[in-house]
Image (cartoon, rainbow, N blue to C red; front, side, top):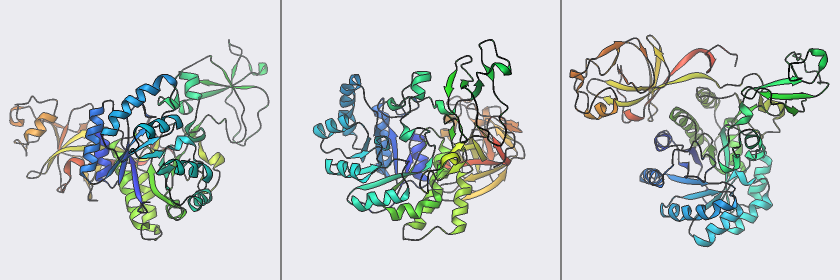
Length: 487
């Protein structure tokens, strides 16, 4: 059994894997075509792309786990096993699986395959974990619903198996992700990898109450609930914003309707306790998140894991820095999940339906000319002259610079910028040099594939093409309209 602590980051694409590894991940997990629980958003739609990811990770001495964790219907079994024949040849470090039947077929046909039991299998007790250990499973990814005391007991009862736990990212409102809401409303089965995240849609509450004045369909919009909770008397219904007239009966109590956004998991304050309870792999959720998320969250938890690896606690300064860092990424507010206790109402985001964060992902550096110190930026959010940009590199280097004297189609100080950059820029043909293109000064930068060139005050070090750029809000903002919100 491996007793070293592992930081396991999501790998939604080869690009994101590169950032996760560069910023501190020991291992990544990536979806496979058709048989991952991120089937629709999965960028690994071709086996050759998966092979590239495996080769990239292994070349850097890291590990990669392939998620094949659907619950299969009959018509997917043969296709799954055919795909597994190809995937085993890629030699990943393990497969993350859920379905007992598919696990049995895989072990029978491919006994050399290492299997990690997915959190979707609801791994909530030591007897279950022991069963799977005796069956040959090398690691159990525990259910998010466990308290630390329960994790400790599992480790004490079954010390021979590796234990993995989520420490950061979105939490599903259903028990270990087993939700029928998406299937019911949009015919997309969460357990087949096509969840539409229906719990995060915008809903109205309607009352079947004639005294309030009915709408044409017999229902009344109900939006005058007192700030102090008062039990609702009568029949109440949810109406999703994009499905007017479709009324869904609900029960409501002081904690809400239970079809709401959960806040995001953040286990920074419980990392030491999780280590002591037997967790060896600290897992971050977010295969659909950006490379900025992969970079910032990886570098934060990397420092935390390094600190506790030698039986040390997080010191207050490091703890506060880590929390501040992860708060720069899109989030719904943070809770520690079920690790300390049942979060109850604290687990739900009742005030906001959109992400909150302290910073925006401004850009990423796609090329850098060391001689002139001109960087080519792929813009992710609008930047205006005078905005303060923070450049962050994998080697922990970080500096702030104003956005000023920026140009499209090149830069006056780097007319002979590398041919690689010409090919990156969609506004230049393969053979057109910047000296022949029309270089335009700009006070603004927009996304959409048009790169911006900016002269930097400092060198970007060893990893210029993995440098990310962020800018802070004056206050925390909602991403929808950039209006200030309380944190």
